[in-house]
Amino acid sequence: MAQKPTTPKGTRDFSTVEMARRNYIFDTIREVFRLFGFRQIETPAMENLSTLMGKYGEEGDKLLFKILNSGDYLKSVDRSLIDNGDTVRLASKLCDRGLRYDLTVPFARFVVQHRDEIQLPFKRFQIQPVWRADRPQKGRYREFYQCDADVVGSDSLVNEIELLQIEDTVFSRLGIRVAIKLNNRKILAGIAELIGEPDKLIDITVAIDKIDKIGLEKVNEELAARGLSVSAIEALRPILALDGTGAERIDKLAALLTGSEVGSKGVEELRTVYEGSLALGLNAALDIDVSLARGLNYYTGTIIEVKALDTEMGSISGGGRYDNLTGVFGLDGISGVGISFGADRIYDVLLALNLFPDDTTAATRVLFANFGAAEAMASMKLVKELRLKGVSAEIYPDAAKMKKQIGYANAMGVAYFAIIGESELAEGTVTLKNMRTGEQTTVPQTAIYEAIG
Image (cartoon, rainbow, N blue to C red; front, side, top):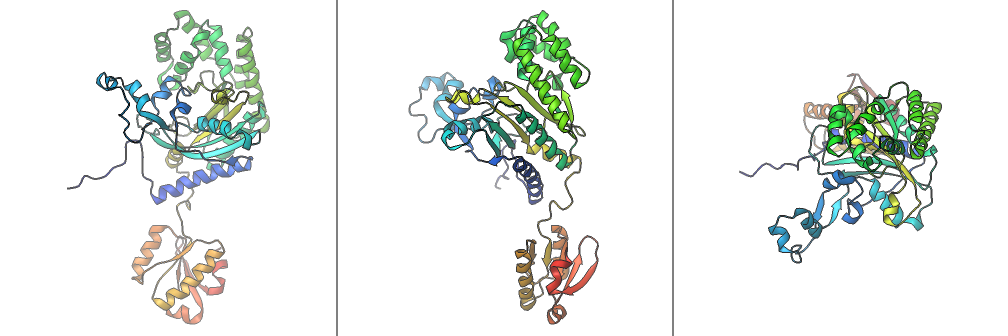
């Protein structure tokens, strides 16, 4: 017996119902991006490893899916690497390309490569899949979609405020109550200076970014394992526990970081984004979270993370400013800031909270019955007319029993079942059955568009 086929771990097939729901998410996000003046691009699924490596930190590099070189890829490899099990060096010899880990680094590459073709500031959005060799679990997949919006070529904090408006607009339209968390990488650098560990910024950010998952004590254990002194860890503890309103937390940070130039600059940037966003108004809760780091080394300023309030789920959106990312590709002085929506997690949240609209999965509005050649031709003429007016319509392909055709209409979730039988054909009418209410009416064929609303 043939083995039953399966998808690779961390990947999924999507049914017609699931795709309809996913497109509802994509269409909502895409519409908001365009509303704010962003234009769409796409980049290849795979990038050169030289483009990807070293941009996501040590842990991120380990999660890159690498692609074997084509042809006789072992021909020029030192066999001792195989015999000695030197997998890291072996991979570098066997693989020149990898699947993209996110959309931000490929976008930075795109900006550099197409610098003479784009107008700065450049506002782009991108909705494409990314891949990470992570351990699959609820809400975490190896293949998943990101929906990114970025602005490059502008240092203005107006961009951050606008991106928060995008976050708020998208989740308001989707009906998801969220909290938007804010921090600034410069504040984290100032804190590292304050506790006497300026060279340990990366170690600090990687550890404290896990505080929501593992708790403060486990974070302190990890900080100790990463070489931070006991005194530095103790000095960090009250900073991570700052309380009060957002404005009060910003004031406390300002007082704490008075002696740090970089830290003070981060506080003022955070204050500008926070106060500007509140002045415009948000449906979302806006919080200041000093532990927020997001673990990505390329952030240099504002850090954003969004979480759903009514269900347990990790981050469903996030982003930040990255002033130096294009510099690694040879183009200095191009600042950028962006956000990314996790479509797969948003899907899980909408499903858990039953927030998908009832008509999301209904592809066809009107399904015509089939009673034979003459009736079918009359029905097909009306199907064409409705399609020309933008109404999704189809005819059941076979002259099957009515029970089977009605059952199909129910299964497909159509709004109206249209009947042109012998009497309707003779009289130039069509009988419409509302599949939701069960109400049945007969109207002239010329009035069908008005009848279905």
